[in-house]
Amino acid sequence: MSTAALKLPTAKDLIRAITFDTDNGKIWLNEQRMLLVDASEMAQLKADLIATLGTDRAKLFLMRFGYQAGMKDAEVSRQLRPHMSPQKAFLAGPQMHNIRGMVKVEPVELSFNINNGDYYGVFNWYDSYEAGVYPKDAQGRSLDDGACWTLLGYASGYTSYFMGRKIIYQEVACTAKGDPCCRIVGKPAEEWGGLTDIERAMMPDSVQDELAALRNELVRLRSNQPLRADPEFKIFNAIGESKAFRQAYSLLASAAASKVTVLLQGETGAGKEAFARSLHAGSERADGPFVAINCACIPPELIEAELFGVEKGAYTGAHQSRQGKFERAHGGTIFLDEVVELSPRAQAALLRVLQENEYERVGDHKTRRIDVRVVTATNEDLQQAVEAGKFRADLYYRLNVFPIRIPPLRERKEDIPLLVSHFLEKFCGVYKKHIPGISDRGMEMLQQYDWPGNIRELENVIERGVILTDQNRHIASSSLFPDREETPFLAEGFDAAGKIQIQRNHNAQWQSWLSQLLQTDFALETFEQDLIRHALHASQGNVSEAARKLGLTRPALAYRMKKMEEEN
Ligand SMILES: [Zn+2]
Image (cartoon, rainbow, N blue to C red):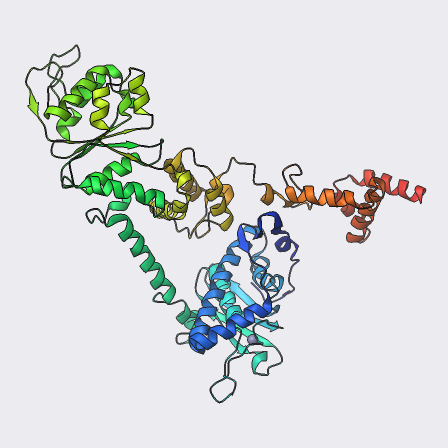
């Protein structure tokens, strides 16, 4: 890329990506949630950080803060300028600094090549919001390097993401120490010779990472502690820290130690099998087999043979004797999902196992002894099945000794972020991708959704998101819910042709704007004329462009303009 033509392209595309969702108290840059923050508050924060942490730590803290913001903006600019030249796409970064009101950026020199990783950039900064607060040493003398730490972090984070390698900037001049403007120079980290402050700020042993590690440890302890330590525990997806989850989980933990028969009640996809596996893993039988079977998936006439085995010649087609699931679960745990689907004969045989610890294979008279723990699950009310005569009452009482209700996902939405990061990790491994997370907007939609299919549905949604998302990008809401149209706020905005696209009926902001309009001294005809004049003015008199803005053809606008002239 040459250094010629360093004029910034129009920033309209970036500004259009900002939407104000005042009804819900949110500002969006594409899918990233933004804040309008008072510049003087930020200055105060910086001064307070210096006072409490000391200059050096405050500097690293703010650089890291800026670095993260820069990385996020780089991701957004990639989305907004996918077809532009690399240089124009890159300049979205400096432009975002302008738009964010942090500093006026003037590119001085820029040359880079994404393919071979070469990078050299020089930028002037005017009116940096950060240059006002400048730390002095104990004697009140100014320090040697610049004061614009957040901005420097931002530039480095942005460029590093953009280039796919570590690019570091240094501030070689700063108004805070009397220079006429701030100036930054950026090049690959290793060309600086020695560790820069920004690299120190991004070191993995930072406080932030320590805190995150501690937090993960705490979550792990909370979920696992009652049960036997099991490093593979997470694979069962019994994950959560919400109150509803922990209540169910602590019941499970207290049942694990004994051989008590457990009945798991919960909706489809709520994680019944995960709970059953956790129960097994936490019990003394953990080294024995765990056998799961969904009774609804086996034809009623075959279920008894499936569960208890068959003796050769028991019925046509039984050419060989074979074991049933119970026999295979000997010494361990058997999990019977949708137990309500058992045939009457299978119900009787199950009751006998529970009462006498014995059974017979189908077509056999030999009684076999068995040691197995029975865990059953149902998403229906078993008691109703008893009342309807579908399920044996005596078996119901045997199974219902220790019922545990597993809450549906909509009752434990606090667990969504935890589950999301678990599934994200899982599917990034499966699809060999690096995906840093979900966009703010995407996470909000995950929280708002009601999850009729529970955790299984969430798992599917994250898997699809991972498949649809490019490397190193956050998963956007459209990749999570591709079929959903009702994203009222995000639909508001402008398409490439500049036409207003507003879901008029759904948008509360639009409605309130309309009613405000009608409260004024309103007249439709005057309104139309004003709007046309405004469009013409905004297009510097270019009729075609004004027509496009108004969603009209050029002749249709020309006709209206002629009418206006005649009337006035
Ligand atoms: Zn500066």
